[in-house]
Length: 270
Length: 282
Image (cartoon, rainbow over all chains, first blue to last red; front, side, top):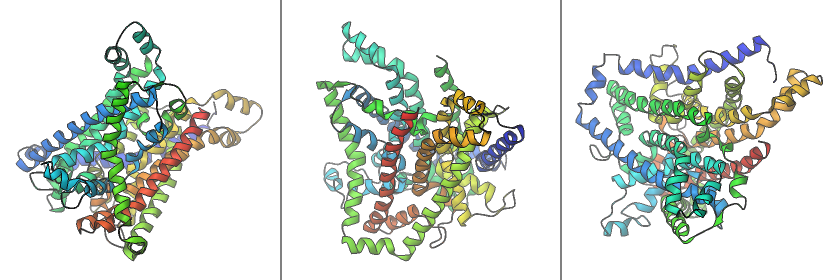
């Protein structure tokens, strides 16, 4: 291994730590300071503000539904991409990553163009059938699904490739049908990858802002999510409640990250 | 760590695309049909709608929208700051990955977790936390809010994990004996780093840089509170698109959005090529 002289080692170490502390660690801890500047009262109070409570519960509902959809879709498409052969597979697997690099605002705009009830491609027809997508929960779930789409797939695909399909074939040759094979063999072996994917998707979904802002219309008490309330509170000079709601969001997302990092080593030890 | 989430090279496309796997059965064909329908309704059709809406006013209308002074200023700012941030990430990201893999010190595990925070923290909260340290009343005595520096900060924050998480696994898997062999043959440290280590890291660094550039171009949430969105000065492209949407001029919004989509597509193709190169080295 390349040996690094001690002074250089210290220099690199200090540079790395300073950069991360100044850019991430210190700012993130400052939110705790801001949120509790006037004692724990501010954070407790926001749970008594009906507008905030409604926004938080809407956020959780949208995120949970989006994560469930992405979970089913993600596991399904990962199995198809790894275990089967079909034309267009390579294009599909590249396109699956597209949501990672599309701007949330563009995501919102694209859904708006297709599903708005006035002049969208499908919107007017769907509204005739009584399905409203834009400015409603459905659109917000779709926008959240879009931005968090690749997360489960990116976790599950490498694990599926690594485990191979010998066990599945053995199970099948012993007479297991495909449902039994999936529940008894495949799922237990990709369990942890699925868990990471879900936790990361959840963090991403709870925090989605741009795409949801465009499709939700940000209607007070109806389609306002927690991230939208942070913006509104901050801009209407209710900074302490903006910081308090942010603290709740940051707490949950940091918890997700810590959870994943605690769970992950267990698997690599196996 | 959430490395696999961020690392382009984590999965090997060669394997995925090689002729392995069985042909579709009736059940899996049905599953594929449903999956592709959902993917089209959610992603493909809406994104094509952006391109169609952008072309509605013809070529000259498209060019007019994109070359309007305010849009051009936004494009210049976004591309300029994204390039700068990507450059900083190439240096700092590689450095941090190096420290995380080759160095041992107390608190390294914490550093490793902190790297992932920008990925999970809601972007609007990211803007707010940076405002706390670098805005008005900053404990550091800086007031960068509503300036170009604020745009840089926000982009650097949200793109921090990309290069670290693409380089880290490659660095972990490097064979140490090659370095030792080179050193025993008389190569000095600088030569070993430049001729042995750096070339094997380059595809991973490039993949991370592409991801980080794409993310920087696309960023919106963290800039809303931090940059002030002043036209001609701190307004980035995504904010421009949003103000077009809010004014009801969806055709103009789509025109600018199509530019951003083009960048995203180029990055996806680039990543696809790089992934194969990375997996060949691994």
